[in-house]
Amino acid sequence: MKMNNKIIISLTLVTILIVIISGCTTNETKKISPTSKDEECKLVLFIPDENCSADPYNSSDLGVKEINWLNDTVLLVSANVGINCAFEIGNASIKLENGTLKLEYEVIRYGDLMAKCSCSQKITYIISELDKDDYEIELVPIDIRIETPLNI
Image 1 (cartoon, rainbow, N blue to C red):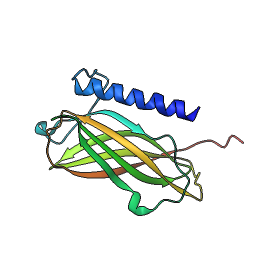
Image 2 (cartoon, rainbow, N blue to C red):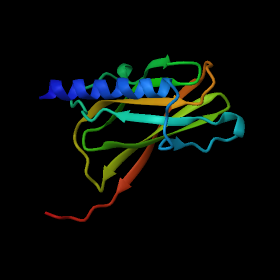
Image 3 (cartoon, one colour):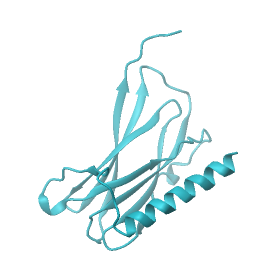
């Protein structure tokens, strides 16, 4: 069952990449409000891995792992981030400031819930309308706390 899900996810990702590379994107992309008109780009797709591995992770395994230009204006960036096992990754946004591409991602926590473990989670960004260049890439976690009533 898990293998079928991985195949479906892989095929979906390949299809999306083909659509992006061919220039057939939809209006459903997230519009970014960059600091200047010269630095406009779009976050076309954000994929957080739904499986947070509870295995202890090595801090050297965290950070940007893959940077691939799919064409002259589309960039794919994959990274590993560390979060508490009780938290989850939410939405994402990007900012381009002074040659630094800031990849923001929400880290959602529910009330005071916290596990006694940390895990590594893979996140992938596909960014379009970006001039091919060597950018500094910075991962920026945005802490989101959702208060929940006690429903026990």
